[in-house]
Image (tube, rainbow, N blue to C red):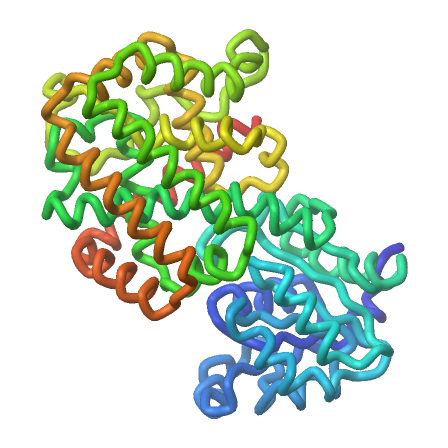
Length: 437
């Protein structure tokens, strides 16, 4: 099935919610030649958006009722925690026979809202771009979910989204949420905990010798990249996905178990636990010809914020990475199976973890540092405490507490966001481009 220029002029596309992702989708759809694109945000933003988007080719409407009545293909681009309320408001106005899609990062509440509030004579197709609005979508995974749609309707959705030039990954919404728990929720908690630990230490990591080198550059840039974004982007993924709570709880437990062995200097037990987990996750990878995810230290060193010379580097325990592999092993998760849904963050997280565990000399150095280096012990203690705090916050499910924890840490790092994000974008572009060749 192909979409002709005539069809691009006849099919009306609607987007409800013009945050950064909604606006990115809208602009790319118009650029691809779709001539009738209706958009809206909150009614209070209507007049401002008319001025802001004048001449853009987008038809700005007052609210979701207007978009829903006119459009043949409707995308809800709203936060996961608001999806039920927004669909309840505008869903009953949906045009007969239209296709409705959602962009939320947690699909179970989105699908539930669609089934509850949409008329039975409309189709449901869901989607999720596995990247943020500042990342070029070309080549990035785009999950597509054919929940309640004919083959023809699903293919139309694929053709509309083909303008993003992303890689389609077709899943059920249950598969999506299970994979997102690992590729996003746990990864975010690890980086959130790093940031909170550094803030508690009143320490900019790029000013200390424990955070010098390629792996450390990835940790610092990705942690600050998360904290420079809006808190609700990550809260919804963690708080509304039941599988995420299970995995985050296990990650926190893995950090706790390993830290207790470290401070007791139980070398044999600690080493056996780390290497058993590493063999489960990376054993086959070490002996395969598969191209590694990450690039070499020599390339990653270009993306440093550090003023500390590399020859002054001190060993790091890499507790955050050791615990991640222990978590995967405990839950019997093979993270390589999830690379089809990789986000740039998860790719980098997997990359630095693989890099550590597949370099046995580096792994032995991390194990020795974890057990005996007093220079890194205070950092590890704060990381352990931060992980516990984030896991408890997610388990309770309190968005107010999540927001406060997030924004408190973000404020500490705010002066370096602009510089760090610029370097971080280049890091992502370099790694994705070179490792995809």
